[in-house]
Length: 588
Image 1 (tube, rainbow, N blue to C red):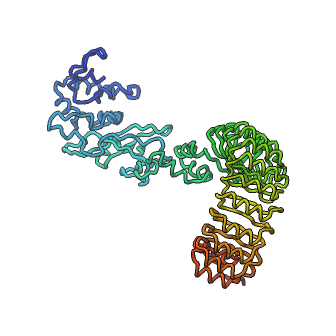
Image 2: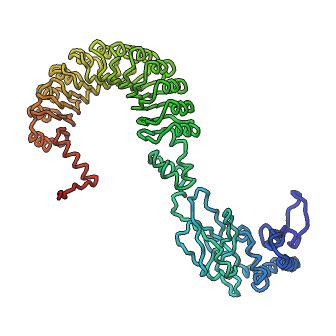
Image 3: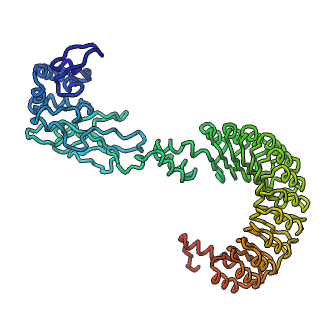
């Protein structure tokens, strides 16, 4: 359109000839835009005024005359010009649209550093409020949140001023879209004073956290829990809601202990997330097999599944998991009364990548399911059983023969004897062994396991009355890698503690609680002779005097002594550090 009103405004064919214009404006001329745009919205007087201005502009011969005409305060911006200028879009007004044709018109270029039309704030901005401008042109609320900087044409005043004045700009704000006006009080005369209240101003806070890259915000949100992300951060704005739904936050779904979790929630998660690798629904009492099935069926890459104390779940959950998740590596389903051997058989047949299993207090599991699991999962590294009375030596033997990579083995309270434990000597990578409360465990078997398993670092022999001083002495001498030794309620005396301090250079933790024959002598000598000891448990060792322990605490500060009194003192110290203040008021 601008070519029609320029000096050489002839119609030319596209792509065949360069356009030659003497107009000093880049792109379409402003008057052309006024004449030809939004004609339906103007009355006849405006169109007639614009036509006259256009005819006069077309008769001008030089760019200098065009500039003088456009900048003439009496002929253009009075009356007709004021009503026409409000329809000029901001992109045609910036200082980059003008050429400096001579020094006389150098004032046409805006001197403000922010003269260029800046890009609008991104859609990721939080919900912001728009504050109205008062009649004096001052923002009523200084905490406005969005601001668009505009550079306008020079002021209509007769004085040659280089200040930038504000111009009207149409801003689409949805249903309540209004015209915004920005500028100093001197430039408020561009718009009628009575319509000033209709203008809105919104500013951008340069310190807004949303100006950070999304990758940084994702790292910040990664430190929030699932509850904090879902119930707090995601409600701030739509952008934050989208960030909280990012796939990286839903790879590990930890819903443990949340009673509001139901099957419907699991179904919604399954509909949106198909890249889940970890699921924890421990203590979720309102989740059923159907909910677990709907979630797991959409997660073929599931690696870890944890569901402690979900007594309402049955074999169906593990059947679906074993079918849809062949890459499964961890299954912890302790304390599920309905679990049977059928679930273990399916895991053994379909999940050959299993490395960590926990079936403690699943009382219906027997040797039949355990043997199938051991044969089908040769990569197992950790297995823990607790109070499984139907699990016997047969299961221990199967795991020792078919799972050579086992590193952690626990059969606490199971119907296991020394004949089954002796098979564990085949495990060369064994590092942690839990043999608590084994009814028929003798000293010779324990000594043989310690001698054969050279990588053993943790040994738990609590609640075994057959373990005596001779066994402990052998363990101290042969356990070259042993760091933790638990002997609660064993049949030991001061001689066992003295032997540990004398022969072991690696043991750091010794728990001899509830050993009634331990006295001040044993506690003192192990503290004096052991250079590696860092923790000594003496809980309910009634023959150990509390004054002696207090002296040891002062003398050997690198060792933590555990007694009833010492544990109470440490608990109070932690409470004081967290700001707890005791209630000293007395009852009336």
